[in-house]
Length: 183
Image (tube, rainbow, N blue to C red; front, side, top):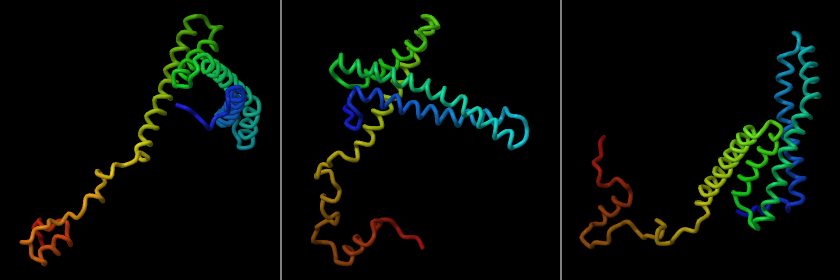
């Protein structure tokens, strides 16, 4: 599955790292604002100050953590693309598993294996949903066979000579001409 809208691989790492930092900083800022507001002393001005203080101190850290994850993921993804000479969902799944394992290397082999499994399964679900979504939405762009097109089938009116003009107009007027009418 080729992605033509993405940058080539050396620049993709920087692009993904910056995007992940932005996403982490904004999402972390919202989460930390709520946390700081709730944990501050009572009074609206104190709560607002607490929320702002927490956002300023924690949102860049969360953004940096996201940037490390995004940069490492893209680096492994680009390395796999270079080694395998193809770009497919297996690269992303493997990159997610390796990223999870590398980021938890300080916690031991058990944590590495668990993080690798979680990273691989998470990316497999994301890639699988992307493939299903693409297959579902591509149905509307598939060319239709003219023989299966209902507008090309012709007139639904039978061409028998025994039908009178009044019954023919009744059939054309209502699709339920053979159904009894209740009034």
